[in-house]
Each structure stands twice: as C-alpha cells, then as structure tokens.
Length: 222
Image (cartoon, rainbow, N blue to C red; front, top):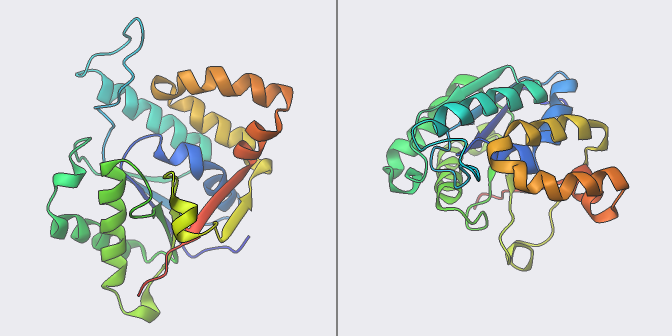
C-alpha cells in the first residue's frame, strides 16, 4: 500500500469509522502514515440506550466519547479531533461554516488523502451533510493541490448509479484491529456483534468477506 503524506478522515459520528474503514486505517497506521480523525459529533442521539437502559440522553455522550477513544486506540490513530457539533444537526448547520471547518483542517494538515462519505449515497442526513462539506472544501482548492478523496457509499442504489468501487482493499491482516474498533462502540454495536461474531468464529464466507474487505470510490471532481 502506498504511504500517504497524511490522511484526514472525516465522519460525523463515533462508530462511522469502525465498519467500513477501520481495517484500512489500521493498515495505513502500520505503514507509518500519520492519520487525523475529525469526528464531528459524539453521537448523543444514538438510538441504542440499552434494554434495560444503560444510559440516558444526558449520559450517552460521555459513554460514546469513551468508546470513540477506545476505537481510536485500537486502530492506532494518534490525532483525534472531536469537533463538538451536535448529533442529528449537521444538516442544519450553515454550509459555509461547515466548508470552512474542513478547509481549515486541510490547510493545517496538508493531507494527500481524505476519507469520508460519498455525497448522495450515504443514507443518514448527517453523513450527507458531512460529505457535501468535504467535497465543497476540496473543490475550492486549486486542482493540482487537491488531496485525493476516497468515499464510502452504502445506499441501496449506489452501485447502479456510481458503479462498483474502484478501490478494494484486503484488510484481513488487520481484522483484529477492525473487530476491536467495532467492539469499542459497544453501546451501538452490541446487537450486530451478537449476530456477526458467531459467523466470524465459524468461518462464514459472507461475514468474513465483509470483515476482510473494504471498498472505496474515488471522488471525481468536475
């Protein structure tokens, strides 16, 4: 894998990084690439409070903050930026404000690669608003100075409209780091782990293919 100058990862919620990019992040860390993860919110409106409840709306942000720190440690990320926006409100933030936030990070870090969601194909309004801000910020740059943008897409129709992923990464060597990142966000992932971990342990091909493969689309600026 190519060693990047610096990678900026931008997602709105704790756990957004765990499912689709934690293996790739761990691989880049092992390759010596510095990584900054900008997480816009603490996911305080996460739907899972437990049954019976283990958290309240007031206590969930601190729980998810601790989970995020644990996930970042599992992946080996050294630079975590918690930007302090409120969950489920990114779509209502001023576009120029959000673009400026991303522009400032890029200006500071000078990344050669940015990883975020693909606008139009990432389902959640916060995902979409984050993706649009990232695209706007990079599009404003001179073409020769732009970092590459790798996007995560998972809406129902994404492959029909944007084609298959052009970047497919085998992260099997970093499966344990990926599992640890997913487990770190236990308040939100416990239900999934109950289903997936037995399949991983018994060698289910579909489950292992999902675990060991991460897919990205290179965003093409017009």
